[in-house]
Image (cartoon, rainbow, N blue to C red; front, side, top):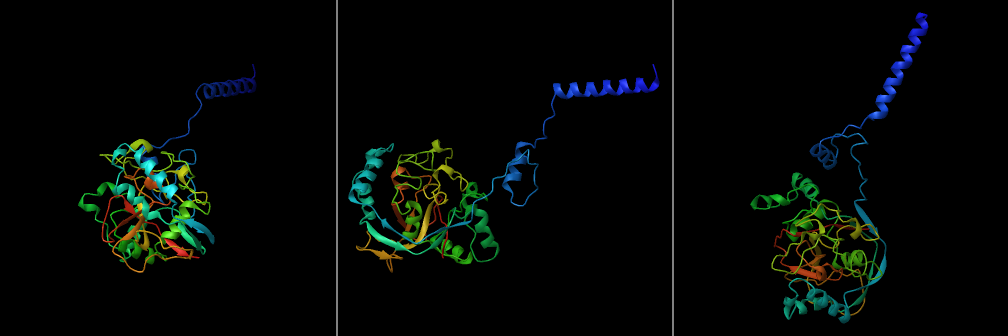
Length: 315
């Protein structure tokens, strides 16, 4: 046989062998070790992995514009009875008597509120964001070193902050704490829904706790804090995350045991008081305290491992 013909047959045989090997053992895309992949996804601005290895989800906007509207703020007596019923469904529901039952009455009386346009943060302020304020010399370092090191993660909501810490950060970031009315409007929308996602409680839509000897509940996937935005199903239709659970949030207003009667426009709460209002419930709170109308309160100097905040801005 001619040398040229032999060369052609050899090349065909080689090609056939390579094709068969490729069919028997397809090549796999290279994979990063699990810890390396996690590091890539966790570090903003870090090394970029191949698209076949790490799927990056585009973040939502840092703030959401809530358009001017009216809504009914507060709860009716029927809704308060419902809150008590929810409380009695908790593991230690027998504790829902007297003082706890009476505490829901601070949601009275329902009243019409008109709010002008405002912006509100999509998520709770994270440790990473708060640390930028610390680095700039405008905020104090949270006392994580005093036993709270496990909460010191960049994607966690910042906790162990006082009301003044929260107010100072928001001012540094070009905003302010939301008013109680703005916070409730963001959580309940104009239709007055019971929870940020709707009227029916779902234990998998928020990082919650329970009324029990042990207030922690890992049934939602997290025993304590969760990274902000972990519960997409609990997001409001406007795109706002974690308005129920994870951390309860400081708002601007002084606390009053009941709302003033009559309608209001852009209310700012009482002109003075000893305590400040808290909203949203946390990973230590059961279902009745995750409702959009539920109100908490505490001294503004207090620090809690289940308490954080988000900021708002006037549009």
